[in-house]
Length: 231
Image 1 (tube, rainbow, N blue to C red):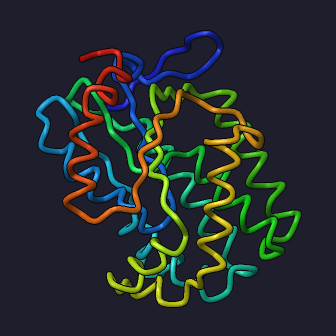
Image 2: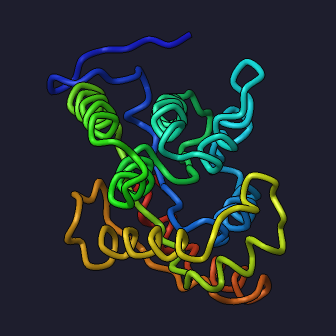
């Protein structure tokens, strides 16, 4: 049962502020799933993947596919639902002392909504409405993040991986889209010039093959767990 209280003027889920939160960020096909699967084997970490299945089926509709087909028409529909479901991920109850999430409500707004707007595929009024919702949420609800792990990957690598995994909705994604997402991530997490950071950032180069990436995750395990401040 969801119970809440007020803390410093913000709504806080009872017990939620006692859990460490690590967000795995990166471009499409940057290796987030592999990273989450690796750390899911650690007993004191609970992994929360992006709720893609929900984005593919909202009472029989697939807003994810619709957005890729016609972003001007369906961008706000998908991103409104993404914002809701990512908020639900942040506030959901976990039993482990550490919550490791795939992306966050922050990247949903700072990367994907921003990209739709900057590319001219989201009308200004839609962007304004989504921004008002985001500002209200982040002002009135406590959404703690302790560490961002950025899987830094070249757009070309992501494009090759995307073609290999053959997800139906992703077949229409061009390289240019991945390049735009990459630049927004770099401005946010590397240059730190575009939007506020909710937490410190740990950068892991992620252009390597699977075995090399598993080795990288093992090498960075202590830094990631130290970033949680609870292990």
